[in-house]
Image 1 (cartoon, one colour):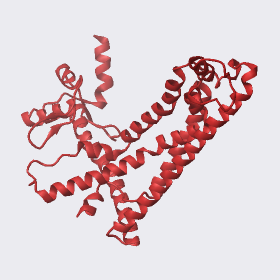
Image 2: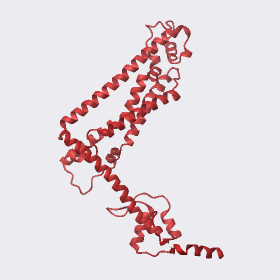
Image 3: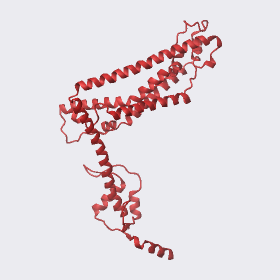
Image 4: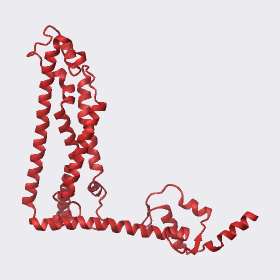
Length: 329
C-alpha cells in the first residue's frame, strides 16, 4: 500500500530525465561558481574579516541553492499543501503509513535539492581560494620561521595578509607560498572527501532501496513509465480542461471567444460588470466543495444563478453603419 501511494508522488529511483536534470544542475552550478569567484570574490586580508568573508562565500550560496532546490521541486508543494479530507477516518495504521510516506518523499526531495549546494561546496573547496582566505590567520607558522619575534596578534595580522600576495613583505614570500600550499591541500582534500562521501551515500541508498523494493526490475521500469506518463497526461488534461472552463466564462462576458469563426454577435459589458471583474482576487470559497477561481469566475456564476441572460448584441454587419451614425451625430 505504501508503494502504491508513493507512486502517486514520486519515482523511487531517478530515471534518465532525473539524472540528466541533476547533471545539468551540477554543470550550471560549476559554471556559476567560476563566474562568481572571478567577478565577486576578493579576500579582505584583514584579521577577523577573512573567516567571515570566506565562510560566507562558502556557505551562503550553498544555503540559497538548497532553498531554491526545495522551492523548485513540485513534490515539496505536494507535501506542504497536501491535506487529509476531514471525513477520512484516522487510524494508527494510517498515521504510521502517512509518516513513512512523508519521510520517504522528504528524503527524495532533499536528495534532489542537495545536488546544487553539494556541487557548489565541492567545487569551491577544490578551488581552495575561499578556504585559504578563511583559514589563513589560523595556520601555525612555527615550522616556516615566519616573523618569529612578533606577538601573537601581530602574527595573526601578518597571516591574514597571506591571501593577498601584494601585501606580504618580501622576506615572508617563501613562508606565504608554503602556507597557501598547505591551505589549498587541506581544502582540496576536504572537497574530494565530500565528493566521495556523497557518491558512496547515493550508491548505498540506491542499493538499499532496491533490496527493500517489493517490485522486480522490469516491474519497476513499467511502474516508473506509468507514473511518468500519467503525470504528463494529467498536465495536458489540466491545461485543456482549465482552458475550456475559462472559455465558458469569457464567452459569457464578451459573447465570443478568441479564435471563433463566423462571429455573429458580440456582447457589450456594462460599467458595473467591468468593475465587478476588475481588481485583486484570490480563491473565494462558495461552499464546502467549491471555490471561485477569479473575479470573472465569480461574476459568471452569479449571472448564471440569477438567470440574468440579457445581452446587448451588435450584428457585425451593422457595426460600420452604427459608427457612421455616431460620427454624424
